[in-house]
Length: 436
Image (cartoon, rainbow, N blue to C red; front, side):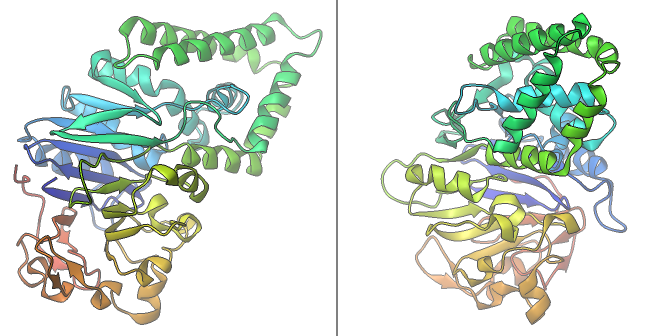
């Protein structure tokens, strides 16, 4: 791995790994911000005008999605629609089955897609889970779409990577989610309801079975993606009748309940795909752990497959305190993609206490910066591949804007280079094409 680009996309994430052979692996691309900063570009404008052209000269381009929240996903669709063929491979997470073997994320998402308005962001998140693979197959071609779950591996620019979470089955879904699906099932199984109620339950079961079959192949097969797509369209066509059912209002209230919504959003994060490089020998500069928005419980469950240390660790869930990495895993560098969004929570103060150098896209939610008025990295030492150490204030990327950082990590936006000192932003456009 030659370098890492951490894009400042507000409250969102877009990390790009530059391979030794000139390829790139983009991990997530999305944002909850329509505009990046008060006078900044729109997010989609930034993707189209800055992100896409930056990597045009790459030998090959791949994409890895950790989960289906908008702040990690929406940019992928813009890239695929704007630049067909941009990615040769798409690695997409498989929704796991629960401890009872049921594909609970899919069942719940189908219930929401029917009984809640698709105009709400809540419903759009759920619909993304349902159409993730079929939409990707339509835009990029089924032969480019690879389902991933625990135990799967992939090759990027000559380096092997492995997915260490989530498991394909036996996933510990929250009880609120299971209870909601079971209650909807009971509503739709009541006697004397119109035939559309049982038809939906049958179609839901067939859709989930087709979905599971589709993601059992790598890459997915076009005919299986098409069957899954057709079943979903049949459910959508049935929706107007379902909304006239006497239980439709109660179903909507249940699905829109705050605790139910929180349980579903948390389950999406908990089922987030986590991956790392495969070591060949001892520790090295390419050791990296990419965590997406994985919860502390998920990381603890996957910890047996983790290494005792990494050159680079991507802080889970934008570095927020509620998702603070709970394990004694050392890291030389930590990537924190945190933007101005009050609902996300503050950056965990624990990261500032670690010996690692933090690379952050913003400090608006950083309690350390607010308390001390300076970057936590001013007290850190940056280890170099040669075995030496460097104060971040003496890093070439800080002292000479545009110079390469020995750590190979770049924090990028259309208007600034934050290097690793969030209180020493250099005014310069660093969105020129990357070096391959």
